[in-house]
Image (tube, rainbow, N blue to C red; front, side, top):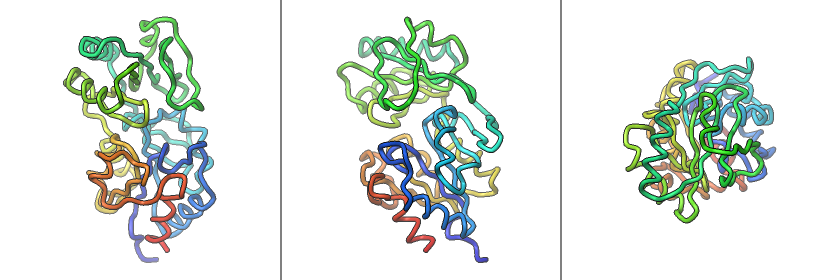
Length: 269
């Protein structure tokens, strides 16, 4: 069998591979199956932590039972064994300092954290509103409760600032304490410094004997920009953030219109 056009297909989940109801269409599942049948490997690369990814992987078809890069690159999850191959945590003292620096600039922010581990919880402050209502979360009484166990990242919201403005202010305020990204509407995040989807995907690709020159990546938000910079080809969804479209090699249809399948059908036939 000749080598596939791309040996590795890296897909974001929300706003990309998933429809807005957290499902994968039959067309997209069939396109992934065709690509895998042609010899390609599929890997999920998502901002979601491993516990929020685990229930979805079984519905992806071929490739859904393998490795998944989670938590913006901080975790590599092995779905077949239900374990983390590796995990990087955000120092909780640094996270608290970072929040203080941000609030010194913009006033009160509302925070949430994703705990580390395959069974880690998402904890949210009293006034924090979950941007994705289908994701389970536990409301705590005070900020100190967020630091009860190791965390992979912090999620931020502000009462009046938009996502782009909050991300810009946070990035300038925290400096080297953490990396700042935006992964979706209402989802500005702090993660371990230097950790991105690109760093996580790079390490995962090594395990799959693949490199950037043979990787086709799909995404929709600014947190996918580093992944597009690493992969040979980056495809943004029509619903993608302008920052990602600006660096994409191609723009496909929306996640609701099977944009991932549209490209895979063309590439793999």
